Image 1 (cartoon, each protein chain N blue to C red):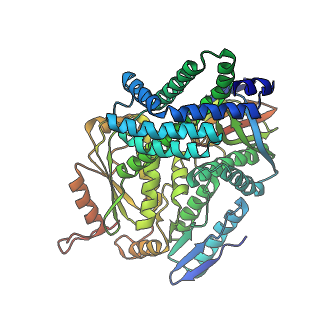
Image 2: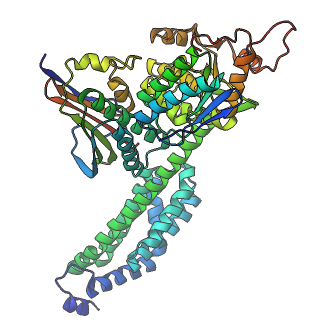
Length: 157
Length: 299
Length: 128
């Protein structure tokens, strides 16, 4: 299989905005990931940005952890990439968008990657299903030989 | 006076001297006819079956203040006082069960009553009537809007407060003994409330340095897979804080749900009822006397 | 970044002060294992109170520490996991299985004390 992209996955509980509404960017920060030393910085920056929207302490922890995992995936599978952090607005709602992109090997079987959880072995378990659980919206695009882009959003309730 | 107004009338639509003059006339008319206009309004409110939560006297009393504030807003052209009054009025009538459509309804009725009285007064001078209405309409619309918005905002604030109060009351984390917390859950839980419960419990464990938590779900009639998952996660998170969870009041239906989502009930510490759960917790904490010769593995 | 490791009687206490990079975590792991050998410690307490995020790598490393220490006949206990962090961990599916946990330093020491005096005090490889 050349590559797949999974449709927008929205598990909102009625308080998130419609997914087809127009989205505008309030602020943006990009963190280049060259290795594991950038992971902490990326998640701290994400936490700081999200804090300006008034997310609760536990939501901030969720967001920071999700960013950590996404950044870690970049390091582990693509060696390098970027974490793009954006404060976005859609309708009346504001939230944080996290986009992890790389030009790595790509994921051959996205469905399987989304099913797996963490495992003890370092080589298995992308933790993507975990990140998907933590965030409100989750999209992933990947092509073998080209790279992967994971986009996730959390909306302020 | 009519001659003067005609000659000085301009073509601008702003609050010009003529408009101010017209409003002054209008306000004077409304003040002069205060008694009968107010009565007519109160009558129409009752006819329209609005403010049924209030007695006739109360309606009349409120009608009086609304009328006076209305006229004053028309006169001064400023709305701060009206906003403050609208909030104040809302604070008083919301606990009486007055609803938004009623408030909007009575303000529109007043607007109507006053407009009709203007028609009656100026019916012989159509041009003047038009000018008066031109001056009146925007102001009247703004008043209606100010009052309605003020009411809705106050109502939303009250609802938020009530919801918060319910939430706080219905998710108590009780400390009954040192190191022992009880979380009785009552009613149907949605995922958001489940999340709140977990957060409150975990914070409570930290604050009270609890070692054992008894979660009683006797009062939970039904639990879907999502909430059952939340329960399992709560148990796991509690363990990360070094505490043990005992679940009590597990109904056969909920036990079935847990099994369906893959929970090994054998690994979960469950006791039939709350009392039994508390006794088990006390045992784990070492409160009960154990026959000599037996070793007890404390939590 | 160095994590201070203090010796308290038969135990070692490693207090993490701030967010640790992957390399820092591995350094910590190696330092603990080495010092358990040097001091023949019976137990290790890792205090993660200051960690605002525990991701998959941190969790894995803590588990590694626990299992490696057990091979040397000592027990590990992780203390100070924050409520928010615990909540996030379980939602992500990071359970720290097989790793003892306690609320804080005091509870951690009490745990190690009990472990040391109850029957079957030989380190067992079974999870909690």
